Image (cartoon, rainbow, N blue to C red; front, side):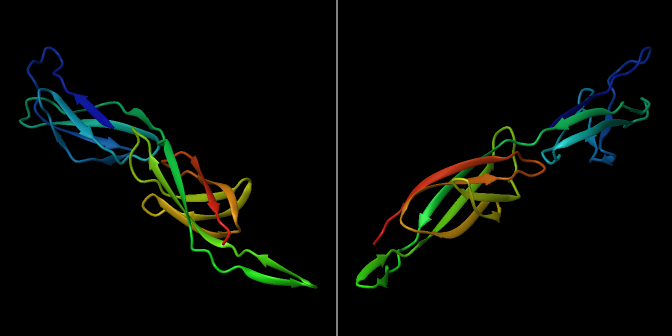
Length: 190
């Protein structure tokens, strides 16, 4: 976000004011900014999503101009859109088990571990690292969830041989919107 304050003399006064402008965001003063040709600019990338009130207060450097404070303006910061990408890593298969039923021997394939890695990122012009949780689903069946750490969430479970489509749903947070991604993977029988 970029905020700009313009300070001008009121007639019959003349000249270009010098000095500093202090921007106040939600009642908190920011570091003073020097005027340059009557304007001062303040930039920030840390405003959380929501509605904020911003005002600017001018202080003269030499006393030739009287100080002034602007009316407050309302600035809305929208949550950033996100993207979620998920990958599946199938573990090494274990040995198949043997089951005995009367005179028949049935080979039962063993499940294999699958680790899902979901990466959640803000889409431009949004920035920052999303926080919160990611929920994993096999079709409509909930598998589990895990917390994002630096935009990455991992979850491990087991699957029997077959082909699956698993989705990762980022649940959103104050500054970030929900998003989802999916991956298709195959667990092979040994």
